[in-house]
Structures are given as C-alpha cells and as structure tokens.
Amino acid sequence: MHNALKFAVIVAASRIDGRGVFAAEPIPAYKKIGELRGESISVSEARRRVRGLQRIMMVEVSDRKAIDASRSTDPMRYTNHSCRPNTVLRIRQGRVEFYALRAIAPGEELTAHYGETHHPGGMVCRCGAPGCIGRL
Image (cartoon, rainbow, N blue to C red; front, side, top):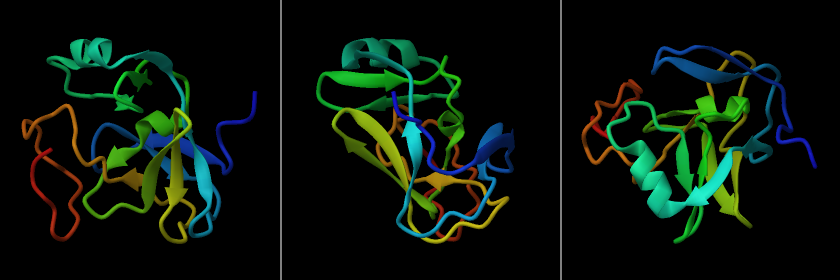
C-alpha cells in the first residue's frame, strides 16, 4: 500500500467550518497533495448515510461506488469547501486525489470546490471568499 499523503499536513481548527487540513510544508503548484481514504460503499448506501447530516465526508467516485471517509483517520477528510479553492479534487481509478491549484504556503488551509453536494442548497457556505455562492 502506498502512502496516501505526498506532503505533510496537519488538522486544526478552521475559520471555515469545524476542523480543517493545513499545509505543514510548502506545496508546489499542480502537485498531488494526497488522497481521501475511507470505506468503499454503494452510491445508494452513501445517499442513505448522509440523510440529515451536517458534516458529510462522502465522495461518489462513479455511478455505483462512493468513498465514506467519516470514520477514516486520513487527514484529507477535513478538506473544507471554498468557492475559491487552492486544491482540486480528481477521481482517478476509483481514488479521490487532491492536487494544488497554485503554490500553497505552510499554515494555509487546504480547500476544494466540491461542486454538487449532498446538501442541496441546505447549508450556508462559510468560506468567506470573494464571490462566494452562499449556499451548498
């Protein structure tokens, strides 16, 4: 099994929501930061599990499979949403990978734009970015 993290990160309190993941070293632009690990489940099971939850750590990787990171010890599960993210989430061969969109400084919170979510407009976005969409 290969290491899910390519760069050092730490989990700490976030201004955006609850806890977040932060760069513990400089991360160059366009480099893979790490992967989101968790339990592989069906999309129907994923949708059942997220009903009524405020914090969702679930990513659908195909029409049939999803990754539930809610019980994972992987720090990337704390990547918060931002309308102006510094990472991009890519699904590759059933894996959820995070890549830097630009150089990221130590201490900077890692964020991703999650796009379509299991919060159909029901959660206030707290990213604080200029041009924030307002709701997830």
